[in-house]
Amino acid sequence: MWRYPRILAHRGGGTLAPENTFAGLRRGMDYGFRAIEFDVMLARDGVPVVLHDPYLGRTVSGAGHVFDYDAHELAQMDAGSWFGPDFRGEPVPLFVEYVQYCKARGIWMNIEIKPARGFDRETGDKVARITRAVFADEIAAGQLERVPLLSSFSLAALESARDAAPDLPRAILMSELPPGWEPLARSVEAVAIHTNHRHLTPALAKVVRDAGFGLFCYTVDEPVRARELLDWGVQAFCTDRIDLIGPDFA
Ligand code: G3P
Ligand code: MG
Image (tube, rainbow, N blue to C red; front, side):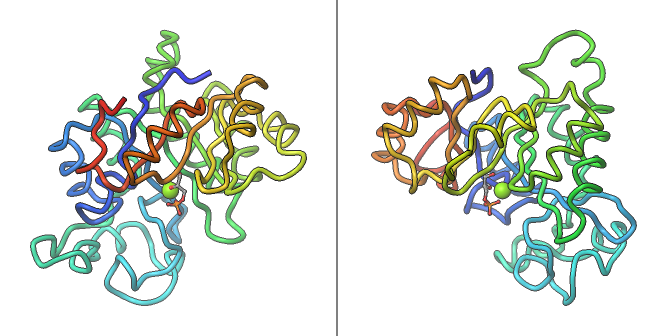
């Protein structure tokens, strides 16, 4: 079952702006997107920040691991120059601020919990508690279609998120569905399976749907392939090519 938007901008604005930044979000909105996927992990002080890599260097100017720095230090680093000079000084977003910014603009979120190695439970716990606090009114009102969907490759992070905020929906990320994927998904009470479209087959898509799970794919950048996946029963996907695949793609 999938009660959410069908087309999401990957990492905020796909590959048209620096990933996981406010500038990325704004670029996504410029293209009409009101639904995004993004990544979150913990800084040294346990404060979650919006980042994909557990180390600096690719998208953030600097060196070392994310957990070598407190969140306020990361928030002053440059997460935009790698993409282009126009984005110099674009900060690493604090998770809570990013979520509040999205909520205020009606942007639906798939929050990917991306723990650094060894921080799985703590990351799942923090992200779930903050998300639940920001969306307390919507949860209380039963407006579940507006509440973010938490996803992760980490089973421990999902377990921890479930324990901290059982009323927040969860999805399990699996690049390729292994034998026994269904008990794994049920163990964290996942509402959806998020998987790499490259490993999906029509038969597998049917098995997932028949088992009652929502089915989401990453990261789909070709319109022909997107059409094919939707025909297989895939209910939603994220894209880096927000210029080729719009929010109303059907
Ligand atoms: O959440 C789907 C997708 O973002 C997973 O891969 O590496 O882009 O975070 P990655
Ligand atoms: Mg991701």
